[in-house]
Structure formats: structure tokens, C-alpha cells
Image (tube, rainbow, N blue to C red; front, side, top):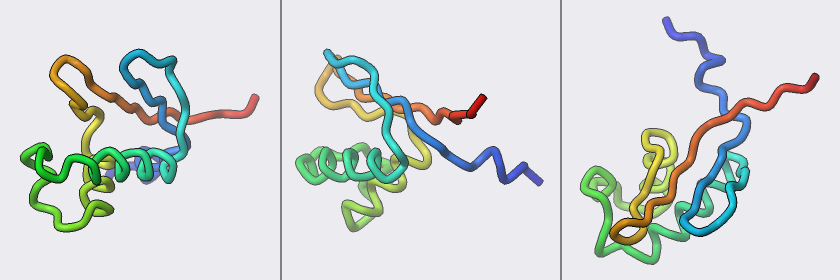
Length: 86
């Protein structure tokens, strides 16, 4: 059985083309993905098309992917990071 700690997300590093890397909470990343996906409902990745609502699409993408092509040659990427206090 996998360790449940493995599935706990603290923050995400988010990389957008032409911008400095940023950090986002799971909720912030979900909101960012919802905004992007709502603007391109006629051009969704194939695996995301099976979900009916933008919220379901964004959650699926956040939880199972790590990138979204915004335009040809420009990709948004996100990676889970765990922040530890020292």
C-alpha cells in the first residue's frame, strides 16, 4: 500500500512561458487551471474532454498531469513540492 504522505501536496512550483517560476497552493493552481480551461473549451487535451465541467477538468489535470500546452511551443508546467520548516 502506498504511503499516504506521498499524496499530500504542500505547494506547486508553476512555470509559465516568459515568467519567473512561482509557487501556488493546490487551490490556487486549481483556480489558474480553471481559468485557462474555461477559455479554451473547444480546444481541450483529449484526456480532459471526457469531463463535463471546468472544475472536473481542472482537478483531473492538476492531479494527473504536470503540463498544459497553451500555444504551440509554449507550455505551462507544475510540480509538487513539499516545504519543510528547519
